[in-house]
Image 1: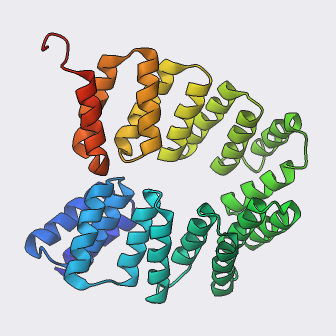
Image 2: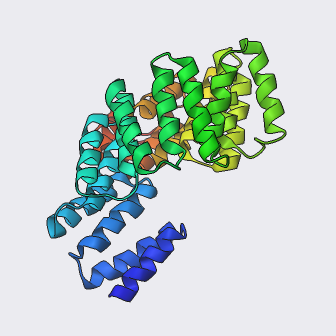
Amino acid sequence: MTTSLDAALRLKREGDLQGALLALEGVLDAAPSHPLALAHLAEVQLRRGRLGEAGAALERAEQAGGSSAFTARLRGDLAYRRRRYAEAARAYQEADALGEKGTWSLLRLGRCQLHLGDLASARGAAAAAAEREPGSAAPWSLLGEVAAKSGAGEEAEAMFSRAHERDPQDKWAHAKLVEARLARLDPELRDREIAVLMKSTGRSNEHLVEVLARSRAGRGATAEAAEAWDRRVQLRGDLRSRKMRGYALRKAGRLDEAASVIAAALLDDPEDLILFRTYLHLQRQRGATEELRATLEQLAPRAGERRGAVYGELRKLGPPPGQG
């Protein structure tokens, strides 16, 4: 049993989520209430974007073995993915109180508080993380974001500079420092400065590409913003970048491309309500009724808490042509 679980965890560390899933299911076939295997299954499903399955496995894990720092952190991650920031904050506080090592939960707690507009608490969580891991860039980056949110531009730049000094290879810290410095320039000069950086030190920095995308969007260059998001997708391939590319394509009036990109993203994140509503509006705008129906039919079995809304939209469409 231990050997099988170790193999599953090795696969998870290596990023082979499908392999880890199969290995964990094998462990659970032999021991259906193994709390650690269930918790790791929840994490794998969370990383795969299967939020409903992750929640079910996590509930079983805590029923079998009680709460731990690990399961509390996973509860936080699940709520964070669902944008339930107050719920996530409580879970991260519990994880930290239960003795989680490192700063993941502290930093995520700070981000939740930032989303909730509680800047003082976010600053406190970031400062605690900096004290726990003084050599890490991440706490200082978060302190910079808090300062930027409060309108303290010089302080934000100083915090991002500290983050960059602690880890010059941290792409996020570098991109945030660049962004803080670019804020001093006229909007039309920012793209040029970012382009220079990306030809040198920032060539593979996907976060710097995001700064470029947002800079272009800020001055109304939506088609160019979509191109930047596409480049970030190529560098990283993450779901958020794919969503942002879809939104940018829609704003640029490239509706056919936007519909395809947003549909694919929605199928990978069926519980994103904003994405769901955007897709519905876009397909109605295009008059693409049958395309909408096909996507909703694919979405329904995996929609989790949004399943009722999906079936409701299918009912509004009525029966397919020829079946009325």
